Length: 284
Image (cartoon, rainbow, N blue to C red; front, side, top):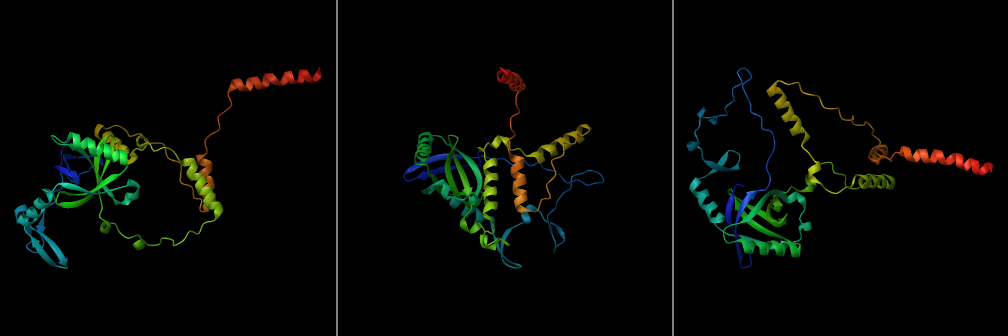
């Protein structure tokens, strides 16, 4: 597994040399853009609209636009010195909190943490302490020229670092348009909605969820590559046009009801055989 960062993490006077490894990967199918006429890949060149010419990498500088059309130019040396100063610091766990206190909206990206060189024992100590206390650590780390707030927790016997957004990076909910200020639902609608939730409630099993679009796209690509005819998948049940909320809830409940088990043929025969005996007893 590729190492993307090396350093150390500490809590109190305990220091753990660690490596970070990306815990997730983007499985999107990447499509190239080609010239329709000759199928050659399209090149994207960096050009200056004022000088009207292509700009090479060595002629590009970074800058911050503090007002429209006004820039502060930042030299690579300045940025490198600032980045190095922060990267060389050990990652210190600032606080320990309950994981349930962190809303999922803050989470960004996951990294596996492995001990580096002589960090095995301290790594095990932190892992065990987090498990026993049922807490997670809050730390700061510099990754790729950006300071990140992070959560350190245990996942499948491995320490995981989850980068999270700073509070000012999460937009305010008051800015979301058209959110109803109060709930205008009847008691019956609420009861029926809760009943539907109960019927659809199950244990979380990540293996049951598949990226159907990516699978279909890869099948299309393979069919075109090999010249095979693509089999059209069975059409999904059309979306209902029911607009009445209560009717929609009831229809949803009816669709999700577990099917009743059909009576076994043997059981039917037994019932049929039992009826004549009952009649004979009556006649006697």
